[in-house]
Length: 274
Length: 360
Image 1 (cartoon, rainbow over the protein chains, first blue to last red):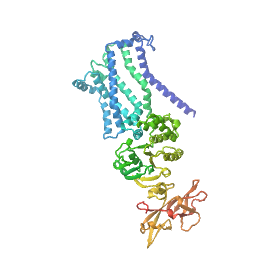
Image 2: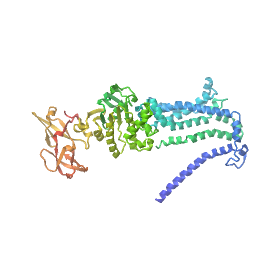
Image 3: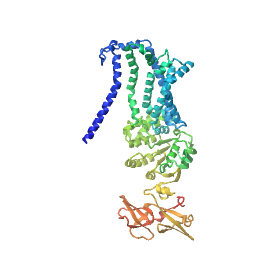
Image 4: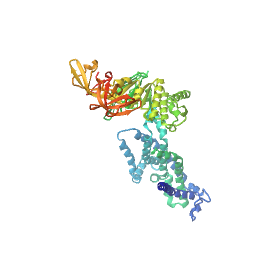
């Protein structure tokens, strides 16, 4: 009896230790990045490394933000990410809903087709894509990059939204139709609000995917670089403070986004056990 | 006016036929129960009336209107789902108000209607809560309140009590009966529970394999089942069926069953042929058990005695057949004891063994 309790206690302790180790593994580099980004530029070269920013300074960040092309790249990144978000949700939500709700001919093939678009590495697709974009006069534009990101994000989004909508009982929409809704109103008033947490999570992933995506951005743009593309191309000729500040600026929006949306994320994952 | 008329309604799912050309007329303000085992097509029929599924062929009328091709919202119906289908993102108040809001009703009127529906179902104090914050039984009440608040001409209920525990179900059953008397709707109620059907329905339509076998008042269905299936599906214990042999000698028609001779009523004699096989359907309460020999009674031996408080349920072996008999609670029988069963001849239902249909 006593040993069983001890075992359970040890088991829990082990779980916590593992969780802490994993968390540290992820958090430590991010934390050091933040410390460096908010120290004076000279502090980056000191040894031993400091674990708090002292003195606290926005000097490094300001240096990065003032560097050539950075502010424009940030604007570009935001535009691309928001456009991607818009297009992805516009196409992905109805597509996911259709897969979840309707039994149509070729549904499984359709689903497979969606996933298979991710089977081709972007590296292989990039050259023909660049050629086509140049031919169509779409090359080097944030809008065409947003289209590319939409294509990259859609498979994930469609699969997520379809599972989100599948978790909304069909009965509820049927009940709505017996109470005076047409199909679309039933979707709008019942399915959509109930799916919103899951959709928010899908939106988060889409935004972060676009914000972080670098390969297509490098291939498809020259003057209208997004932030990751810009940082990547100038990385090896940049001073160290630039790298730290750049890393932090690219990381921050994802973290903030994640922070605000985490409630919905847990909600989405919690559904599995509910 | 909301008479419901079904004309040759057919619906199949792939190769399975769920309803086979069902025709049925449900009168205005009638409480009609669709009763049958699972898979008999009763829910399919209800969903057809609701318009949630398109039927393959046939017509459906509600009132004077042909609603066959209309969507649910244009059929003047309200429905209570088996799963309740209460909207989790809306408060109890907004759930009940949902249908009224869809009609763009003024706030004051909505408030009045929601209030009276909530009062009718004793959930007034729950109005500001969310469905997750109320119990299963209360959620069920919310679903019913939501359906009656719109004052639809037709109220459809799909096994509304099947998810409640036994005690709650009894309570809710009585309450539904009271409630639906106050609502001026035509009610179609689907259930697989024969007790529910008997206690609630003005009429019961017994279904099997996509067809309606019998549609009549509860007492008629209970006392005069149209087929062997109806007799065995309704009633607890199910109707007993003794195998008998018809004997025609000139103008006299007799039936030998269980070692005794029965005389069928003159009205069915002409339908009986010599040496035909026939089933004698008899309810457990229409058999009188006696521990001593009685003239004209079947003799058998007691197999099982089940005391049920109000009476004792006996399983008696007669020849090779088993008969359930209700005996008085104070009549003491022991297993293996010889017993004589006197059958009320006027209560016997005569059923053709081959077709399973009552001989009329």
